[in-house]
Length: 420
Image: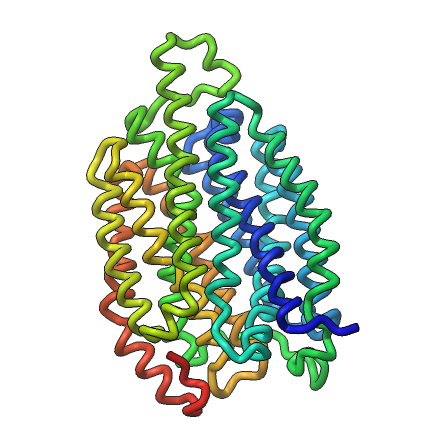
C-alpha cells in the first residue's frame, strides 16, 4: 500500500528530527573532545574541513543515487550511516581517527541532505500547500532537544557520550517507521522515469541558481557557525581568550573556582545553543503560515533584521542576558532562510528535476561545513567575539538583497511557480 502525502510528511518530520537531535547533542560536546586531544581550535576545525570535503566529493553522485535507488532508500541508508558514524565519532581515541570519521560523516550527510529535501519538496507539491519550513522545523526541534538534553546531562556531571549513544539507538529504531512512510519511487515523477542526471559543473554555474545560492550560503554560514562554534564563543566569554587546554578528567585537580568556571562554560555553551535552536524551531514550525502571509521576500527581510540585532547582542561582551537573547534572535532570524531557498531553487527554470536541490546543497555545504573552518582559525587568532561580529555582514546582506534578488529570480519562472 502506498503511503499518502500526509503519512510521508510524518516520516519526513521524524527523519529531520532524528538528524537534528544527534547534531544538537554532539555539538555541545565538541569542546570536551578537543580538550581530550589537547589541540587548539585551528587544528580541531580541520575536522569540519574533512566533513566538507567528504560532502562535496559525494554530492555529484546524489542525483545518480536518487535515480538508482530512489530518495526513500537513500534517506534510509544515509541516515543509518550517519547514526553509526556519530556513535564512533564521539569516542574517537585520537584526532587522526576523528578526522577520518568526520570525512565519512560528510559522505553520509550529502546523500541525506539531497534525498531528504527531495522527499520534502515532493511532499509539499503533493499536499498543495507550504510545508517545507515546518518539516525543517522538526530538524530544529531535534537540535533544541539534543542541546538542552546535553546541557542537563553535563550539569549532572555524566559522560556526554552515553547520551549520544542513547539517541543513536532510538534513532535506528525510528528509521523503521520512517522507511515505511516515505514516498515510493513510482510516486515521484522525477525518480520514476527518464535518464539519471549527474551534477555537472554547468549546473553549478547556472546564473539564476548562482544568484539564489547567495542566500543559501549566508543562511548556512550563520547556522553552521553558531552551531559549531557557539559553545567555543561562550567558553571564551567565561574563561577568556586562549584559556589553557585541560581535559575534563583533570578538572578535579584544579582549584575549585577554576573547575567550576569550566563546568559553567560547558553548561552555558549547551544552553545558548538550545536558545538558538529553540527559536529556530519556533520560527520554522510557524514559518509556513508566515511565508503565506508575508511572502518569501518579507520573510527573509524580517529574518535579516532579527539576525543583525541578535549578533550585536551576542558580541556585546560577557555572559549575560544579552548572550542568550542574541543567540535566540539569530536562530529566529535564520529559521526560514534555508527551507525557502531550497524550495525556491527546486523551481529553477531550465534545470532537470532534482538537479537544482543537489546543486544548491553543494553550494550550501561549502558554507555550512567549510565556512566554520575559517571561523575556527580566525577565532583562535583574533578571538571568537571578533569573528562573530564579522558574521553580522550576512544578515545585513539578507535584509538588503532579498527584494531585488528574489525579484530578479522570479522573472524567469512561470507565473504559477513564482511562489511568495
